[in-house]
Structure formats: C-alpha cells, structure tokens
Image (tube, rainbow, N blue to C red; front, side):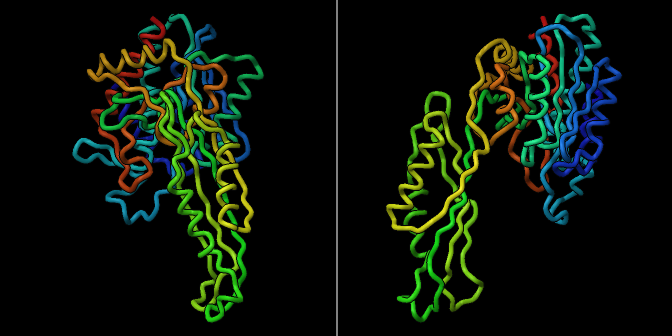
Length: 375
C-alpha cells in the first residue's frame, strides 16, 4: 500500500468542485490501464464519468466512487489550503480527504495489488467513478448504470467508498439508505402596513403553528432496518426588508429523510392536510431526491464483515443511516451493495481530514474483500 498516500494527495490536489473532475479521472484511468483495465470515459452534459473493467467473467465486483467535492467555503478558515494536501499529527488534511478521494485512492491501489498477486482470478473487477455525486446526480452514476444495463453488463457486487464509518474505519458499513423528499412551500398572505394589521394577512404569523406542528410530528416508528423518518426546515424567508411592511408571502424549504415504513404520497398528504387544517392559503411543490433502498444480503456483506474483523478486530454493524448515496442507482438492479469508507466525522467540514493509519487499514480491507470474494 506504499502508493496509497501519494495517490490520495495527487487526487486531493485537484480542485474538483462539483461537477468539475479537474483531471482526477485521467490520473485514475492512467493507473488502471497500466494494471490491465479497459477504461471507458463516459461524458454526459458537464459531467465526466469513468467506467473501467478488468476481466470478462462473472462475478463482476465494482468499486464505485466520485471525484467531485463540495465547495470549500472561505479558504481563510482552513488551517492549510484545502487543495494543498497536508499531513499533521497523523492525519491528512484537505478537501476530499474523507469524502471521498482518499477512499478512491485506496480502491485503486487495492485493485492493482490484487491483480498483481492474482492475475488469473475467476471473475472481473470494475470501477464506476463520477464527478456528479455532490451535485444533482443526474448525469453521473445513474447514466453509467443505464449504459451498462442496455448492453447487458451485470454487476453482482458493488463497494462504494462513501465515508460510512463512525469512530473507526470499519465500525459500521451501510447496507441501505433512507429516501429524501424535498418540499418548497409558499404561503400567501396580504401585504400591508404594520400600523394597520387588520387590513393585512401576515403569512409569518399564520404559518408559525403549522410549521411547529410539522417539526414535532413522529412520522413513523421506523422498522428493523431503518430509523424513523425525520423532518427538517432548511430555509425560511419572508419580508421585504422594510421594518414597517407586513409581508405578502412566506417561503419555506424542508426535507424528509424517510424510511420504508412510509411512502412519498403519505408524507405529501399528511403535510398538506396539516397546512389546510391551519387555514393556510398555499402552493407546495415536491421533489424526490432519492427512494430508500436496502441491499440484498449475500456474499459481499459477509466478505466485508470478515475483512474488517481480520484487519481491525472490529465487528461491523449494518447501518442505513446518513444521507443519500449513489447506491440508490445501483442497488435496484439487483446488485449487492455495501458502503465502506473512512470516518464521516469531518466530511464537508473546514479542515476535512482522514487518519493516515485508518486510510491504510481501509486499503487493506478493500484488498481482503477482493480476496474473499474471488477466493
């Protein structure tokens, strides 16, 4: 794994703010070609994707990940420049350290080593790398999966390098994700002078009780695989900026992270019923960010748990928490999917970082997964 840290730094030095790949996939492709992979760039819209495959036989195990990162925010807030990978006290700092360029580097290096040690193994290894995971996720993994399905290329197993771990690498793996439902509410009032409230309708006052009720509801109990559904208001706006004008409208943006214990229509109907109960005049638009998924249980989960136990001594718990991931596009094809990466503690934060020791363990776990699957 001597090449792991240098490759992670090489990728992290590229300012690949979504959807810009900034040359990361060219670096990955060059290495994979040298290892014997057939590499296929797939560009859709402004998004770069890479599909690479070594071998033609089944089963096909795919490593999936992304080279795009979220914006850094003010660079002055960072202890060291976000696109200048820096080691301090056993940690590697920089944007993408946790989410998820370091994990992509670990995938590449582990695949290279496995192929070098087992050039004639029975099966195939693939990579799906996109620059559209942190953005709309329309022209990324979803489009690549469409291409593979149209030509009958079946993925049996998929390891996604999202930062799934909690305190230590491998303490948990994700085997599913909650769904995501966005709502954009516009409440209509009547603009007026603050000195004459009887001639106006204040949408802030009108909406307060309804929004409070929505924030307090227990939408479901969850189930054996998923935690209970949550509701969060993420944006709230009203007013003209003047201190003496009652606004005519209020806008609220909110999100449900929902389990399989409830459906999208149920969430929509209950929400709108509460808004009507409070006498609001409103318009609401909905957007489904992701449906919940739970992967099938099989060889990959067993191989992953075994690899983690052997390398770290930890017994990995199975989780469906966290945000959304590109697993939502892969699992519905019948692929067994696990998400295993570094700690998620600093993902998307200023001074994002990964423990160098934990990163090296992650690479060893990926290698051991390959050995277990293709034994």
